[in-house]
Length: 197
Length: 305
Image (cartoon, rainbow over all chains, first blue to last red; front, side):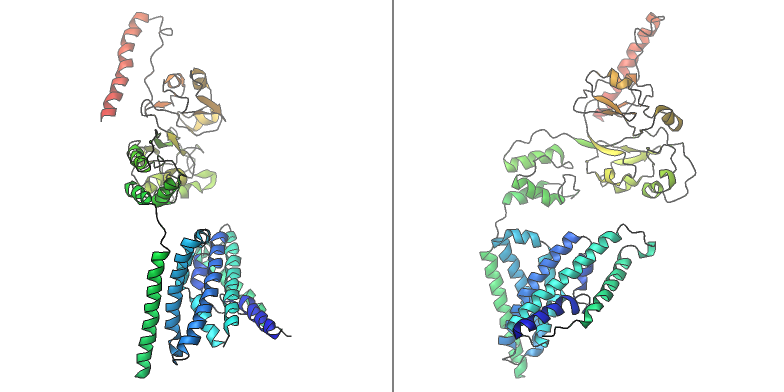
C-alpha cells in the first residue's frame, strides 16, 4: 500500500504540482510551436507520453548498470542524449514497420521529440530524485500526461485567441506568451497539494 | 586519467552498440516504398502548388500510387504530365479538362468610386473598409492586384482597373481564387474553342447595377432565353453559364443588351439581323457579311500567335 501511495504522489506531482511545462518550464519549444490546433497538440502530447515513458526506463537502466558501476555519473547528460536519440530513431523504424497506424498517427512529432528537453529532463530528474525502476516509469508516463494536459489546454485557449479582438501589437505570439504565463500562474494553485496517508 | 579512459570507452561502446542496432534495424524494419511513387514525383512539376488538393507533389504522387487520386489531377502539368503519370501507372490518361481562373468582373464600373481611397494599394486592406472598399459596385474587382502578387505563374494582371487572366499561363492553382476578398475569381473549365464567359458577379437588381457599372449583368434573362442548350440560368439577377451544356454558339452574346458576354475574351461584333434590317435590306446586308467574317479571321490569327 505504501508503494501505491508513493506512486500516486509521484503521478499527482508530475501532472499537476510540478507540471513539466507550467512549473518546471521544460519542453517549452514544442509547447509554443505545435499548440495552434487542438488536434496537433493532442498528437504531440501522446507522442511525448510515449517517448518519455520509454526514455525514462532505458535511461534508468543505462544509469544503473553502466554509469554507476563505473562511477561515471557526471556523464549522465551526454549518455542520456545518446540513449534518447538512438531510442527515438529505433522506435520510429519499429513503428513504421510493425504498427503503421500508430506511426502515421504520431507522424512528424516522433522525430521532433528527440531533442525535447522535457524528455532529457525526465531522465535526469529520475536520477536526481533517486527513483527506482517502477517509480521512474510512472514519473516518465505521468510527466508526459502533464505535458499533454498543458498543451491541450493551451491549444484550446489559443484557438479562441485567433478570433479575439486584441491590440495589434499583441496579435499572435505575444498574446500566446501572455496566455502561457497566466496558465502557469493558475497551475501554481496546485503547489499546496500533498498526499497524506 | 583512468576516468577519462573509461569515459571514452563506455560512451564509445555505447554509441557503437546503438549505431549497430540502428543499422541492423534499418535493414530489418525497412519499409518498401513503391518505386512508382518516386517516378511519378519526378515527372510532376514540383511547384507544390496544391492545385490537385493534396499536400504538395509528393502527397499527390503517394495518392496516385494508392489509387486514391486520378492520374490527371495535376492542373499545373496539364495533359503532358497526366500522360506520363498514366504511363507509369499503366492506365489510360483520359481527357483532362483544362481549368483556368476566371475573374467574374468586366471592370465596367472600375472608374466609379464611392470615395477617394488613400490607403495601402492592396485589395485585402481596401476590402476591410466600410462598404467593402472604395468601389461603387460592391461586387466588382477592386483592381489593386492582390491576385497578381500571389500568382506564381505570372498569369493574372490588372488591366484598366480589373484583373485579367492569361489563359495560356494560368495553371489553375487556385491561389488567386483563395486570396480575392471579393470572391469573384473561380476556376472554370476552359473551352479552347469559343469560350463563352459572363464576367459579372453583381446580385443587385438592374437599376442598381446600371448606376455603378457600364455593362454589369442586370438579370434580364435574354441570354437564357436565347440559349438553345439551356446552358444559362439567371439567379439573383445574375446569369451563369453551365459549361457542361455550353456549345459556344454565341447567341447569348448577341442578345445581351449590356454587351457583357464575351467569347474568347472579346465582345463579339453583333451581326445586324436580316429581319430587323428590312428597310435598307440591300444596302445593309452587303456590308454586314464582311463584318461577320472579319472577327472570325482575327480570332484565327490570335490562336496562331
